[in-house]
Length: 239
Image (cartoon, rainbow, N blue to C red; front, side, top):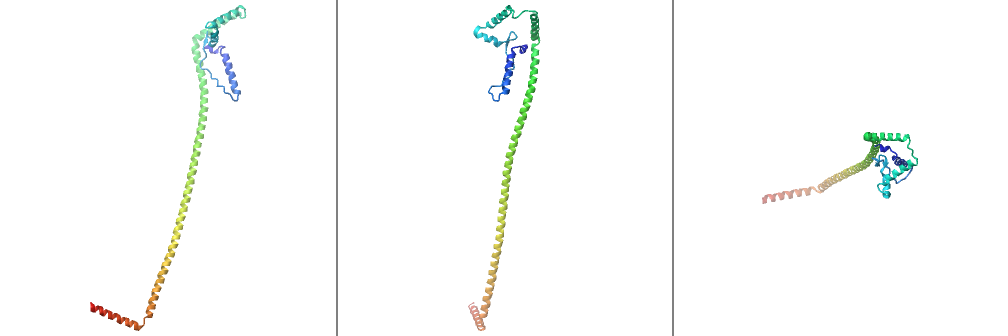
């Protein structure tokens, strides 16, 4: 677990910082975002990255990295580039303590650090999810307002249709009023013409009757009366 704090992480951290700097300064970039690895890369001997060993495999085989490490250490010590002084013994003692602590409490320390990292990540995720939910709520409100606007347009159309229906009803009502008024006037004139014809017919009959009565002389009246009596006698004789 303590290998996470070893120097092998320095190049990767430098790469992450550099990539973040490039991403923040670049306006347009097709480079994918760098993701933080969940688990550290594998190591050997507690602190040497595994990819360093794999670098030697195609050229030297499996034993190449160990031979290179041994020869390099021998060369540094023999040439006294690395002097084995009293600090070397202190380093060995400190290294033994570190290895003991890592062996004894490394798992617990790693779990504790993982929990702390998870807490920080959860806080960031909560803030991110809250921002996403807020944006989604805004989008939902905008869509709802759009839906309401479309409903208002439908209401406007319905109101226009209601106005047209009211205008049509008023138009037909006025047509009915005109029809009834014209019919009343026509009926009035028809009644006047009928009354005038009746009056004229009555006066004509009365005038003809008066004219006929005036044209009959007393002799004609007496002759007609005698003719009537004679016809009555003949009828009574036949009966």
